[in-house]
Image (cartoon, rainbow, N blue to C red; front, top):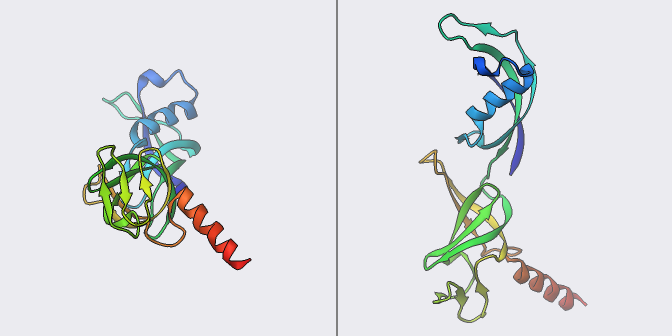
Length: 185
């Protein structure tokens, strides 16, 4: 989900930032470079948190900027296979639902929404035939990550399922839990 990661890099601080405190100027430049950076190993960089160490700045002739060897922390968001996550339904289509998870979206294919025959209604609702369960925009859901693809690094894809026990729309999960508790008593 969210991770704090320590990185090392060279930060280029442009001359217009020379009046700032060095750490603030470095963070400003690192944010320009790293925010929204996506990689398979890091995930999505959400923010540069802090600079821990930096070398003396070196000015390279002809450039005018100062270069610093820097050690810094970033906040990243990364989904791993089999991870259970909560999110909100952003949109419903005839082929499935799009779920907002942190700074990204995942897709739940219609076949992975519930253990029932599912139809798509004019009101943009996925409706279960036998269970009469309905999935619509703004519903809160618990899902499991079943596919992660970084084939297009700028647009990673995440496949989700809600067809396992303990997963689904929050109300479905709560009702299932209450039913099991009542059966025990």
